[in-house]
Image (tube, rainbow, N blue to C red; front, side, top):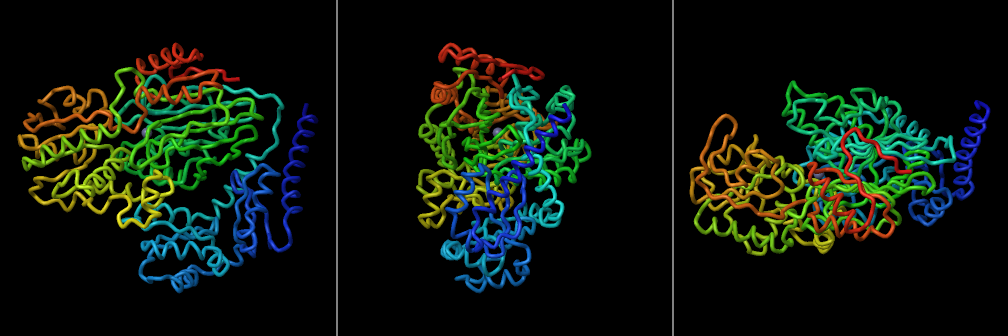
Amino acid sequence: MINNMFERVSQGQTANQGIMATILKHLPSETGVTKIEYEGPYIGLHTKTPRFLLEHQDLISQLVNSIKKRIVIRTDSSIRSSERATKQIIASICLSKDDISDFFFDPALGEVTIFVGDPNNFAMLSQNDIDLTEKTGWRMIFRRKPRNNRIYKSINEILSKRSTERILFYKQTGEKIFRPRLSRTTEANIVCLGGFNETGRSSILLITQESKVLLDFGMKVGNDENLNSLPRIESTGLKTEEIDGVIISHGHLGHSGALPLLFKYGYKGPIYCTEPTLPLMISSQRNYLQEQKNNSIYSKNEIDEVILHTIPVNLGSVTDISPDVRLMLTNSGHILGSSSMHLHIGNGDHNLVYTSDFKFGKTIALDNSVWNFPRVETLIIESTHGTRDDIFPLREEVENNLVNSINSTLASGGRILIPVPSLGLSQELCITLGMLNSVGKISPEMIFVEESILDLLDFYEIYSEYLSKYLKLRISGGEKDPLFTDALVPLEKRQESWSKCIVLATSADLLCGKAATLLKEISADITSKLIIVGNPLPLSPIFNIANGERSILLGKRKIQLECSVDVIKGFTDHSDYNQLLAYVSRLKPKLRKVITNHGPGNKCHTLATNLNKIFKISTQHPSVHESIKLL
Ligand SMILES: [Zn+2]
């Protein structure tokens, strides 16, 4: 037995050495490659003459096709100029010198990210990308300059300070991913750890013959009982060192909030997510920590570990994350950087899609969720709007309802308060209100937005390649205010009297936050209005108001609402019932099994029953703790 295993390991090692040999064989001497090294799921080619490889991307494509592994081009650290000299070289060719104030160096990857304000400067620098890499020895990443880069800066400082540690982590992660397979057969099971017949603490454990991977690791916020607010990983007996990787779909706490806890209990492995998801989830986790004060279940140090162990993955790229699991993240249309996961298990023996939160419909900020997967046998689909009651008007009608509701109040000189969650729907509303204002459909004196919402909106500017085609066209077309953010003013600048103004403030449930304070201000004013959008949390104050109650408890104070209240149905970043059915219908020919999750028990149950009746597919609506054999 031991001999057999040794033979298989030896074969595997030979296979890996074969990969390196194939790369070397295909590389002409002009490439100046000094080192070939694992970099997590990628193979890094380190070169002293980066121009050749950067100009011969066809060579890289051929290599990728032949070794079936992703390759990244890195500069040899010996050719990198000092940070000061690099800044001077870049500034020397800039059209406007004071346009660039931010340089973020990452020594572990040899990359420098530069925030550029002037679109002409941006275009000019991007065109000279290879020249600048050759002159400085750093790979260039140009990004649109945001209003504020506080969060981005703090993350980069941690990444930069701990570069040596990260280089070692990438190498060790690569060695684990590309370790030889021990078995030729493939098995796959999932264990439901959280977010089944409930919302929040989303997490699934995928177990195959060779690997154990977590899909999301969220928490229920506002639930004091730890066991019921966290994924039930302890019930599986799984040790943190046995986990090969964690994949995070998006930055909401319900999907990524418990991640630091894994590091508290000894996890040292990789986290995979899209590039924007990293700052968004870190920001959510830090806010949670701040709100909890001394009651938090994790500390700042563990959030820093999340930053260090995250490996960004591009949408649409197939990436090895273990010897028998390949991952492809696809746009899920829910919030910036949100993704569904396509997992290719074994040699294509089974294909699993986990939608996570997704919107199968367009919004102003994001495109429709991707649906055209090459193969899907099992689908795990969210059920937030899983019953026939959850059919909403089309976007155009929803927008018209919002416009009418706003205008009727502005006409009578009233104030408008819209409570929102800090991430997702709030940025969608910022851009929508900005757009409606720019085309003259609404004309408030001011649109005030809470600073924390604007901070996250900055990431919509930074990672603009993740936005809808509509917004990307506005950016590439050189529009002066492409994301319609010029009209948005930080709430902190609000005057004492804010009549004829709109305010977007957190939190969405009115349990706490600025929105609750502001509601007290307008509650007695019959000319003002509270506009309710999104999905109110059952039994929260806003849920009760949406259902007609006008005497409510805000904090410790009972208030009587004299202001008017409008509920705008359909402003949601989840798919409605019809969109859920339309999505399954597109996948139907190859589907063998559908599993519903993320919704109260009745929604998960109803959706599973209806999908079974309509599409004649086997469906299940498991609860937390249940496991399901996929293969
Ligand atoms: Zn979400």
